[in-house]
Amino acid sequence: MTLNAGEVNATYIVEKLDLPLQMEKRLQALGMTYGTKVEVLNNKSGGTLIIKVRGTRFAIGKGISKNIEVRRSWYGA
Image (cartoon, rainbow, N blue to C red):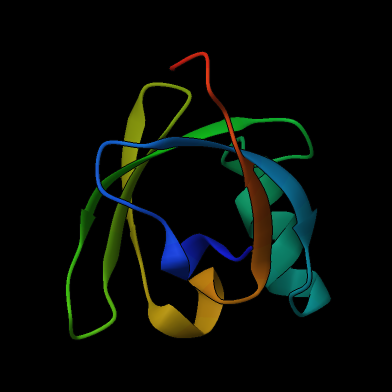
């Protein structure tokens, strides 16, 4: 599934980043790499997604979040 379909207060594990190279490198520099746990804090209807990665909150748009493949983590953050 993709991150933009994530449920609020659920934790996911990053499987794949399918973004332009520069954007992918930026997210990796911020700590979002393969296997990283991502918690969805808010999923607004307009497309903005508030997430927590390694203790830091980020707001990302729908265009980015729909290109991040994740799987559900059943063990929490």
